[in-house]
Image (cartoon, helix red, strand yellow):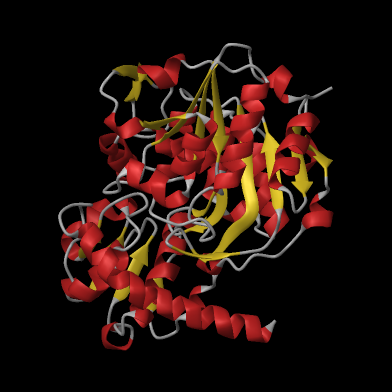
Length: 416
């Protein structure tokens, strides 16, 4: 009989109770954690975001996982993260509330990006352009890695949870290189050499809307856990009404043999999906007919670039740039031919259009960085680097964007 993956779902007002419940459903922390072991906990703390914003993992989830692994006999508990390019990891820990929890619970804080004791690891049968990566010795030698993601909508990959969270174990250079190749495949290549033993996911207030920076907390009140990150992500998607067939993660994960996503191959324990189901607002998957004023050529495109273009259309509206740039033709997905128009009108999104870059405004990356498509439309200049001025420009646009999102959310709530 084919072995099935177990996913535990808990729903309760007590985070402590939920953490303990999902661990018990998976056999108990004492059977999951070796005594006197080193345990690295990997929350999502990639960006500045206070508790309650759903940008980062809930700090109380971190607290009760620390307590559980300590009670199971762990000798050393380390909270580790490599924040997004241009972000300071320790500042993100402080902002997320993780630093305070670690101090109160006696756990170490670990900035993976600052670690200089690195080992080069070859990736066998790499599916992306990342053939090897330099990873911290501490990360590779720890007895356990426990993945603590938050489920949130995400411009680059439609959603972020278990699989994407492990992207935060690499240095900035690798982080950047991953965006220049096929990101979904690159993430699975990283998983092939850095495997979390267990994932405990935060669906307490998962993020709907235009995440990761403009997240809208959805009151769901769940914690989900599994040894299989693919099964967990697939289950989390079903809990919020996201069709896994429109997300590139799962095909890439299947090719890498990292886990199962088919519902009949997953056993849910604790609560059922039906008991906790709550439809999330995931606007990255809106049809392109939502923006009829623009010619969007999207045949053969992936969900990552589709979601980024959806985000970019709304970003243009928020910034007051939508109407004035309707002449732009936005192209995503591999193409055999392109329209013969002036170069500045053709916005070429992603690396699958590399051979056409001389014909238009090129937005590099697979997928491109979150703001680059909108900036290409506005500036009519190639967008290649997450370099000087990137974070400053994002920061300047953030309050305008947030005000725009707040207005949409208020209107959405009225309709409900």
